Image (tube, rainbow, N blue to C red; front, top):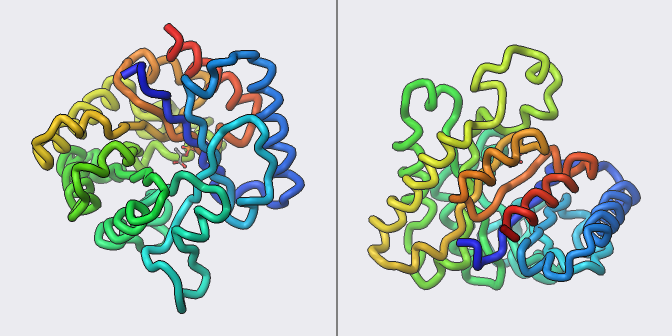
Length: 276
Ligand code: PEP
């Protein structure tokens, strides 16, 4: 797997609040990458920054990372107030689109059917979808993780041709593991498993399951080209555990991607792991 670049996706969510601040973050990101002084950096790491859409196309990018949009509509154009189409994202220099993030499912009522429509629409254009899946706390406690993951993948990939699998990344993001870093109430409580990132062992198990589901669905070797990512409270403290599994093709980083104190060490660890 180490022959393909590691996909590192920075999801800024609804942060920061101004273009000026976004610009400052991008400039320190670029400075940090330059300071690493690695000529092969972008051969090893496919870094994708997903800022709020209003900042897309307005931020500097002299170093060579990619842009992604956090959400997309499935229609190509028309009377859909507040929505953005694939063509618009492409025009704003995006190469990737996050689809089905659990915050979209939870707060905006996104259902598997809509997620499937978005995946098809993204694949119909020139963007690469990053499909987010994962179980809730209740589902994990009821041992339903495997069923939930299987169902979400089957539904999201309805009518998706095997030829498109190399363009797709599937991010396993247990809902209960997301955003725990930025929640001080949770940070200060006891470290039970539901208060932190998932464990590398469990992520490994689900990654193997996702590969199995894909090969059952497509019965083709091409499923190996689909990238599988983990996301959920990854930080510089826990990253090595995930990288050591040697099974992931990438990571989706939310909160930690906004602070260069956190994000640059994460990037460095990914690069070093890819260079072993
Ligand atoms: C995310 O937004 O998908 C995510 C993983 O967030 P965080 O890293 O903050 O948990």
